[in-house]
Length: 93
Image 1 (cartoon, rainbow, N blue to C red):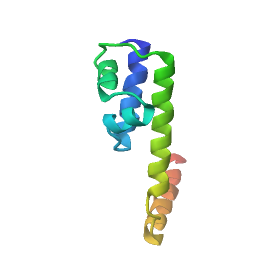
Image 2: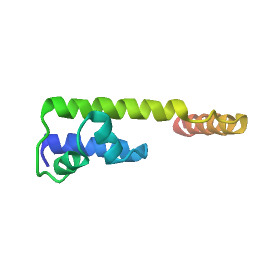
Image 3: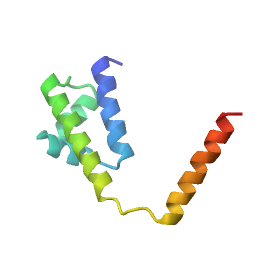
């Protein structure tokens, strides 16, 4: 696996993690979905400018998704805080 392919796969992984489709990502970057698919399947190697455009588009899409999430309930916040405290206690033993 080449470095450029690793970078492309990292983008695909981040997009999947945030449930962003290749089509939406490509459109946000001003590219076609086929272009991204060709990168993924190693039928083409991304030019630096295009790769950076995809990275920036992905960052923006992720940021928009995070901002649009509904606020967490107080019960969820307490559960997360308790889990963090328990994790700290377990790792310090």
